[in-house]
Every structure is written in structure tokens, then in C-alpha cells.
Amino acid sequence: MSEQETSEHNTAEPRARERDGVRPRTLDGDDVRPRTPDRDDVQRRTWATGDYRSVGARFLLAAELLCEAARLRAGEEHLDVATGTGNTALAAARRSARVTAIDLVPDLLAHATRRAEAEGLTIDFRQGDAEALPVPDASYDLVTSTFGVMFARDQERAAAELLRVTKPGGRIALACWTPSGYMGRMLALNTKYVSPAPGTRPESRWGTTDGLRELFGPGAAVEAGTRELWWRFSSPEEHVRAWCATYGPTVMTLESLDASGRESLVADLTELVHELNTGGETLLMPLEYLEIVIRPEPGAAGGRVTER
Image (cartoon, rainbow, N blue to C red; front, top):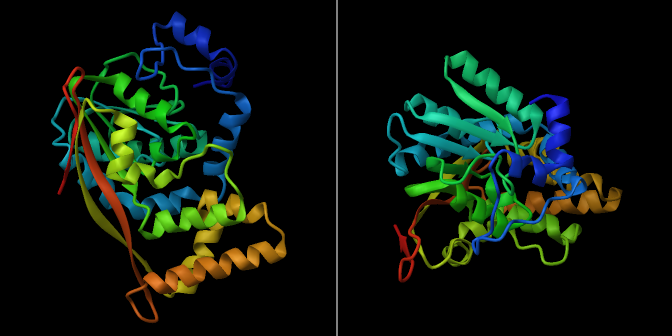
């Protein structure tokens, strides 16, 4: 997407989408309200800060497993939302799907594009927002997001967008951090030092069966089960140093604090890592997440959540 197109996308989004026949809607069918440039900029800066390439590289296994859980088929139309460095998009392309991948951050898309080119994979990478996906209704057999869409500021709106772009009979597959695992607790720790905006729900809501019921409504069949990734570092302290330099939400929180606040947050994070470490002097720490497959069923009498 060119700079001119990006500017038009940000400043005249409702008109552009109506002209292209793409109308983001809520679960009730109403047009979603336009996002503000300031809000988009905060999200973009958060994930452009630090170095998410090194973080995302450690989540490769979750992307591969998600494609397997979703029973991805060759030739299916697949959309990966908040693709980041492209882990799930690449996993789907390796399985011969027809892949479109969307992210808000140009630098992450550029990195994902280089990865696809290195493997000789064809993926349609686009800059776009999880809360206003630049694609038509009912376009994809499978819609995925691996530790991505759960960070949308307007969670109901993002969930409605996932439903909007899924074909009848299609699936939505997600990997989302749980509240009780390291990532959920680490993200909650940030809010101890920087209060979220009023009305903000925790990102780990997506990693709970109750949250999924609320977000996807009574007409969706949800299958969900917990999995673990494992952090491996030479020591807990080495992980904390790397995390504070590379993970955008943590970097942004640290930058907003004074010296005393930064020292306190690092101490709390170090304590959390030591609590969860199973590796002795080295770090071997589980990262619990929920693997989810959703089958939207419009008009169904009632939804169900199956835990596995």
C-alpha cells in the first residue's frame, strides 16, 4: 500500500469502504463507527516499538498447530488477522491455502513479506486494522489470528469483524493468552503501573471460555483447549532484559515511567519469571494459551463451548 493510499485509508475510511463495497458492521448489522487516527497511531507505535521479530520467532509452533487444529485444506481462502511477522500466514501458505494477511504495522509486514519470498510462498500482505478489515463480507473459509486480534482496543468490534468476513460454514481459529499464564499475568502487571483507558477489558479475556461466549454470541460453536509454549533463556534475568528491550507493550510501559517506576516494574517482572520458572538456574518457563476453533452458526438456537 502506498503512502497516499495509506493516508486515504486513515482519513476517509468510511467513504473508501462504501465505494469498494466493504462495510464493516457490528453483530447487530449496524455500521461500525470510524476509528480515529490517534487511536490507530497508538496501536501502530506499540507494535513497532522494540523488536517484535525476535518475539514472534518464538511463537512459530503455535501458528503451525493452529492450522492443524483448524483442519486447513489446500485451496481454501484464508485470512490471517494481525499477522505480525507472518507466522500463521506462512504456515497456511505451506499447506497450499490461498492466503491474505493483514497487519497495522508496515515494518512487520515488510519482514513477513521477506520471509514469504525466501520460502517461495505467495501471500497477499495488506496493511489494515483488525477493527475495520479492508475485505468484503463472507470472503474466507478460514480466518485466523495468533496472539494478535486479542490486542484490539474494541474487542466486540474486532470479533464482529472476524464474523463478518467468514463465509457461511467457515471457521475462525485463534490462539490467545490465558489470564493465568505468564503472558496474561505479565500484561496485567503493566496495568498496575499505567492505568488503561476507562472501559478497557483485559486482552486475556479472549483466552477464556466466558469471554469467547460474550464476544462471539450464542450462535457460535466454540471448541477450546489449553496448550503451552516454552520460553528458554540462559537465566530468568536474561529473559527479563530481553523482554524489556523487545516486547512493545512492555517497552511502552517502561518508557512512560520515571526511574523509580521502571525499577519497580522490572523487579515485579523478575519475581513473576522466577515464580514460573521450572529450569533452575536457566529459564524453562511455560506460556499457557487457549487454542480455539469457532464455527459461526447464524440463527442457531444456542451456542456451545467445548473444552478439550
